[in-house]
View 1 (cartoon, rainbow, N blue to C red):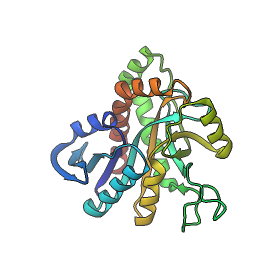
View 2 (cartoon, helix red, strand yellow; view 1 turned 90 degrees about the horizontal axis):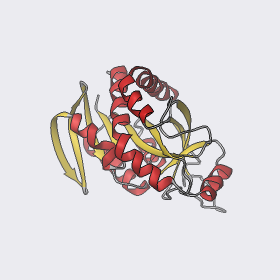
View 3 (cartoon, rainbow, N blue to C red; view 1 turned 30 degrees about the vertical axis):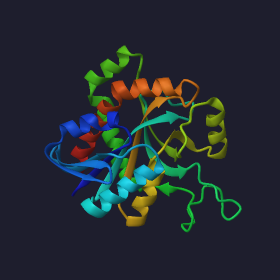
View 4 (cartoon, rainbow, N blue to C red; view 1 turned 60 degrees about the horizontal axis):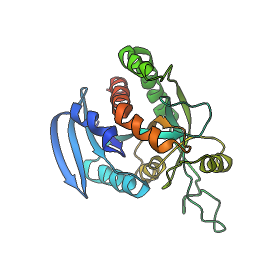
Length: 248
């Protein structure tokens, strides 16, 4: 099995890429793909760049050229639910494109020609990643200690709906509007639902796992950048280590 790993920021992917052994480097479409071995699993990893178009382009190339068997999209997100704090982990259950609106031609959020307003992750994929995140939060005590020193205490995992769109949610008004329109959504990011659309087209399993970096409010830009620089890649690499142990 070949596992595809994607992240939208270099800071989210750097430690994952550094941990891959026996690297083969392939450059296509302004992306650099790293194929090799990660914790005993054959993988291809890539920094996709921000946004739905960039992520969809990258996912399509991963599927068409590398023939990946499944994709994990990892990285940070802004909290929409008040129950989420910085450092918590969200596993995507349903993925919405919150900026898709072709009314009155079709329902709000409906993806044209699909009849779908969201893409649902198969329960077995969710359960496997849930176990991986649980193992990470339970067993990686040294990393938890580092987080605690920065007041990230008792991070938790939830399974919930994720909204993706080409908007950085960075104000209370934006957050409240998104929550009103999609009340089940717990966090927001800029790529996951676009990758889900591609994976659905090609029948490739996908799991999206996001770490909360900010509260999607007026302080989001400062909080997100600080968290990404300090912790995002460590979270993603540690979760992937546990995930790979479960799928090998």
